[in-house]
Length: 190
Image (cartoon, rainbow, N blue to C red; front, side, top):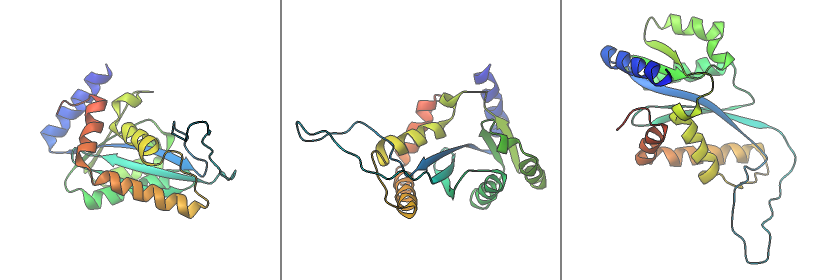
């Protein structure tokens, strides 16, 4: 059923000339995302960090050819979602089909009113309840945390923000990586 719904959405987007944009959110904190690493024989690797819990939230949209992102301090709520969508409308021409999960902020009244103000330029489709394997943005977040920022121990929130943004920009310069996210999601054969 999930694949059928997404196939209908893809067909509708093609018929209406819409650009498909998958959107998802993720976050980082000042605590490191621990990954397996190496160390000299007989020495256990040590990660030193302080116990601050400030979070950096990220929102990204993946199209066939690129991905777009915004970083926000704290949690993502309706105003940040609207800011992200309006930014996408300025940078991607034409009509958009937004595919995202059922986050309460995505279904909020403020977001719905914003979508209605766009007079048909935005069309929303929702992913099934828990289906991260259908969203290519999930693979972007996985790569970001596992390969770009593993075991990174920032000393300040500004340092976390700087390195997170730099890693995402570095990933964006690799179009083959964006294609790999689509292939992993196995939604649309390339």
